[in-house]
Image 1 (cartoon, rainbow, N blue to C red):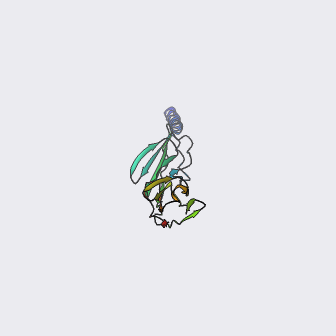
Image 2: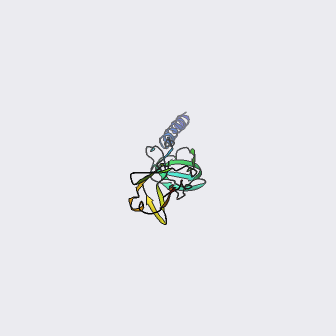
Image 3: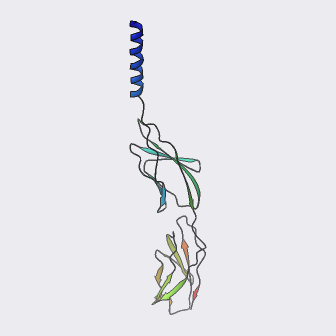
Length: 173
């Protein structure tokens, strides 16, 4: 009888100790999105790093974002990790980046300024006037110094990955 009672107490103690040693699993990554050329997600409480797999290439990052600028289809998987915790369950996300290089850019001149259609996702533009290539951050440029001579002008939009749009219509004088 004493042996049975001792054995029962031992089993209860082992069960209690096993429950105390059980590690908590981190929450899964949520709200993955792509904005401003970066993949972002909500921070996971107690996570110290995230294991990020992009098209089967793995990265370990400490922040809840990762920059991606090149066109393509990305199969993404993210796991949150933290010391003393079980890794989160895997969260999957598919991202397609496709910059529209076939956009119609229309140039017009208003009061010595050439203006053109703003292009979505363009980081800057190359304005070509005769043989001059001018990097422009906005969608207009003062061309007063060119108005006294014959000129030919057109624009390329440049995207985050360095690709360019097809050129615009051509302005000539």
